[in-house]
Amino acid sequence: MKRYVFVLSIVCLFVFAFSMPVFAQKADTIRVGVFLPMTGGVAAYGQEEWEGIQVANQMQPAVLGKKVELFLVDEKSDRIEAANAVSRLIQNNKVVAILGSATSSNTMAGSAVAEKAKIPVISPTATDPRVTQNKKFMFRVCFTDSFQGEVAAKYVYNNLKARRAAMLIDQAQDYSVDLGKIFQKSFTKLGGKVVITTYCRSGDQDFSAQLASIRKAKADVLYLPNYYTEDALICRQAAETGLKIKIMSADGAQNDVLLKVGGKAVEGFALTGHFDKEGATTKLARSFLKTFKDKYRKDSPAFSALGADSYFLLIDAIKRANSTDGQKVRDQLAKTKKFQAVSGIINIGQDGNAVKSAVILQVKDGRFQYLTTVNP
Image (cartoon, rainbow, N blue to C red):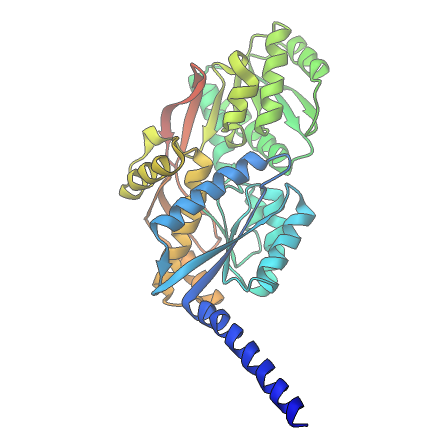
C-alpha cells in the first residue's frame, strides 16, 4: 500500500511538473489561428498571405503585454477542408481569432463554423459580397467584387475605349461567376454591350472552342475574372491562334504564376488589384515593404500585403478592446475607421466590409506595373 501511494505521488508530481509550462504558455500568449490554401489549386495565394502574416507578426509580435502565437492549418484549396481547419483551430488550438482564407468559397465554408463559436474571422482576400452577409463575426481587409467589377467596367469603357465585350468565365468558381455578372451590369449601364459569354472550369487545358466563339463575335475586349492559371493558359492559346484582343481581369490574376505561365502572351494584360508598392502611401506600408524584402529577398506581392493587413487590423482591434473576448474584439473591428494599413486606408462598418481603394495594373516587360489608384 505504501509503495502504491509512493508511486502515485511520483506520478502526480511528474504530471504537475510537465503541466506547468503549458499553463504558463496559455497565460502568456494570445493564440491566433490561420487557415489558408498552402497546397492545391490556389496554393500560391495562401503561401503569399502566410508570408505577409509572418512578417506582420515579426513587426508586432505582442499585444496587451502577451506574445501572439500563430497556428496555421492548410485548407488544401478545398471547401470541406476549410471548414475542418477552422474546427481544429477552435477546438484543438483554442484560438481567440482567425485569419483566412484566401478565396471566397473556402472563407464562407470556414467562417460558418467560426460564426457559431463567436470567433472573429478576418479574410485578407475573399472578395465575394456574400462572404459577410448575415455574419456578425466575419470581416475582410480587401474590397468587394461589387466595387472591383464596377472599376473594371469603367476602365474598359473609358480607358480602353471598348464597346463590345466578351467574357470567359470559370463557372466552377463563385468568385468568377459573380464578377462576370457585376461587370456586365456596369458595362451595359455605361453604354457598352457584352456580345458573348463563354465558360470554362478550373483545371481545363483547352480553350480553343471558347476563343473561336469570341473571335466570331467580334468583341474588342475580353473580360477574364478568373484565377491566375486559367487566365495564363487562355492568353497563351489566344496568342497561338492569332486572336488579338485587349484583356481585362481581376485580383485573382495578380500572381507571379500568371507571368511565368503566360510569358509574352500576357503582355498588356490589365487587371484590378489590391496593392502595388508604387501606390504605397502609409508609414506602415513603407516599414512592411522594407521588413518583407529583408526577410524574403523580394518585393511583397499584393496578397502578402493583405495577409499582413488582416493581422495588423486584428492586433489593433484587440488593443482597442483591451481584451481577447470574441464579442469585444468583434465590436472594435466593426468600429475601425481610417486605419493606416499596408494596402491603404481602411474603414470597416457593421457589415464587416472594408471600404478602400483599388489599383489598376498592367503587365509590361514581364512584370505587373502600377497605372493608377481608383478610390471608392
